Amino acid sequence: MTTTVPTTLNPSIVGQAEKHHTALLARVLSGTTLDEKRWITLNQALVSGQTVERAAHVAHVARLTRWAPADVDDALTALVESGLAQESPAGQVEVTDAGRAVVARVRAESGEIIGRVYGSVPAEDLAVAARVLTAVTARMAEELAHA
Image 1 (spheres, rainbow, N blue to C red):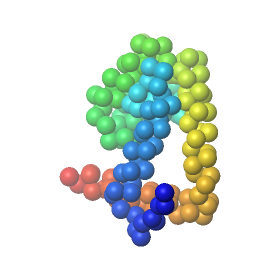
Image 2: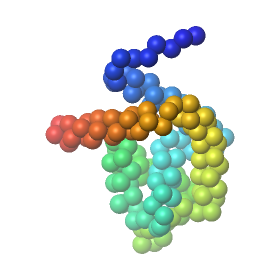
Image 3: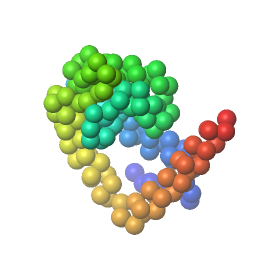
């Protein structure tokens, strides 16, 4: 099978890449209690490197993903109920040791695959793609803010 290289970046290409990333994530998450929303909510809590205020964390993840804050809040509630995160009476959320272990496993498994895939592309091309996709995403965010 041969692959034809497109002449320019377009929404179809971006969408296909996103769908493939999502499918890979779903495969890696199978066998856990996590779906995409829970994974991103948990991972972002861990990325913060500290305890996070619940409302601020929900707002942050909703901004990153363009999901409804209520959906992110539901995901966070599920994480607390499953013991992957915990919440203090003051509304501070942190990832538990069990949550850290799940994140480590998912990152390791997905990182192995992503490493092979991205490693097959020259670093200079990845740098250009990163700049282009960052610029496109910023412009889309501006457009969505005006809607």
